[in-house]
Amino acid sequence: MSAHSFGSDNHSGGHPEVIEAVLAANEGHAPGYGADPWTARVEELFREHLGPQASAFVVFNGSGANVAALRALGRPYDAVICPASAHLNVDECGAPERIAGVKLLTAECPDGKLTPELAESRITGVGDEHAVQPRIISISQSTELGTVYEPSEIAALAELAHEREMLLHIDGARLCNAAASLGVELRELVTDVGVDALSFGGTKNGLLLGEAVVLMRPEHAADFRFLRKQTLQLASKMRFISAQLEALLGGDLWLRAAGNANRMAGRLGAAIEALDGATLAHPVQANGVFAWLPDPAIDGLLETMPGDPPFHRWPSSERVEGSSLIRLLCSWDTSEADVDELAGAIADCLG
Image 1 (spheres, rainbow, N blue to C red):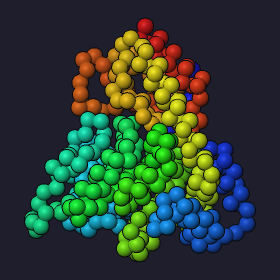
Image 2: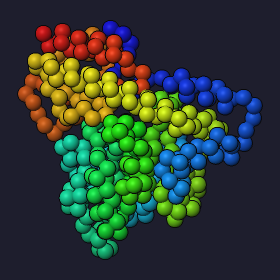
Image 3: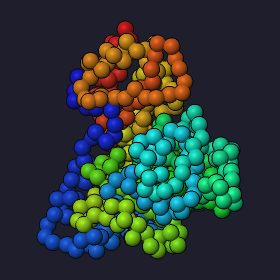
Image 4: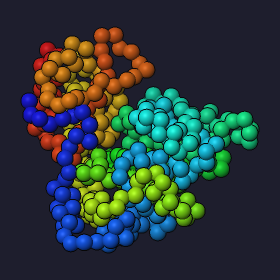
């Protein structure tokens, strides 16, 4: 098989337009720590996409963006309500608790999506000095299970949060994929539905590295530059991250890159769904495909496919006798040939 990996959208390289932007930014000298024209243009691009009140701060990575955003919104005795499957809870090595100092209050969400009812069930102990204080609701868009929140679903969570004097944060590592899936502008998933803070993802959508924390309230943005520095997310040569974000957001690259990943996931999901012995665990709504396959077929695929790993066995509270759940992620550079080759390999292993 080809060397294309479906293990993660982090496995793909940088988009050629992003690489060109970095090379262009490498000409000559420029001030450090964000006092450069690339960063100024990126900050303006975020305002164009999300509204004049949006304050964007360029950072290195997604976990750093999440932790820094939570530090801006919460206090050391506060709590964050999130799905049990959230990246915050599963994949950040306790950084929200250790560094942001907040406690995570998780809810089981079978499809990865938090609802107002589930969030409400975790709002307890308000005003009790013996209890952490629920302060933030955090969701991932798209979710860790590949599902996508409709704008109305986010608006309902924002309404609950604000009614309870709380705030809503989005882990937008794959926000572009969600917007492409729904056919909406970025602001329709953030500004228009009452989101207070966003961790905007670029790395999974064609950047070499780079994300941004976007704060929608001036009181949270006023001193955030100090939190960014203290959270070890201030880049000295920030122009090289900003140049990538400018390439992504300055035109339609964000949509083209995410749209291709989504289309390829849809193609792969349809091919798997047509196979006897394979079952999709969740609707394919963004760039992730989650499927139940018999364990012998999975073992055969692992022997056949390149990559380390070529895909992931995915933890699930459900149990299907003799089968396991796998996650397959498509990227900006996944081709129809890549998908068809994988689908053929799955069919062979099932046969």
